[in-house]
Image (cartoon, rainbow, N blue to C red):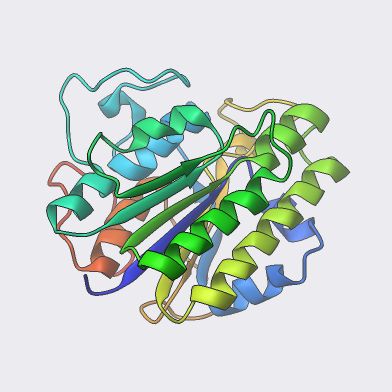
Length: 258
């Protein structure tokens, strides 16, 4: 692998929520990354379809998953996890919402950890601890860390842009800061969201639901550069280029390094 990568998704994080959550690392994250606060996700703006599009770099009309229930692809293609495995790389995944297990096909992961966010306290912090412990011990080539509390315990319970929602974003940004401070020299770090939200829900074709932030931190990315015109489909090709592995020929997104 050319470079190792940590990908963090903060479920349900709107860009304006990120900007107003009050965590001091917000400014640092923007100053040290190439970033956008105007990225686009897919429709429907729902967790599993959007994450499948992130890892497979195709829209839902291609992968066929339009709800939070997984169905096998009629015409399969390799996603990011499978391309890493084919190149001899080692991947790890830590997540707080069980349906996300299907973003990787069986056999693609070396390490994984799951916590049920509906019954566990401080899910995001504990998942970050689990991922950090694995990185220190094994140094996998690719680590996916999924933080769920902004969506579940913030947006759905109290409403998008409520104080509780902003507090969840602040806690998640704190988790990102911990990852960056300990592993930013060894890993390129990508931080994004899958969708936004409005009221106490999401999934509509409105800016509040479909606009997402994206941050790319590492030696291949210019600090403070504002990116334009990028979508969630561009993440997998970009990560593949950072790692020096092949993309699946059916991927539709573009690498930011082209």
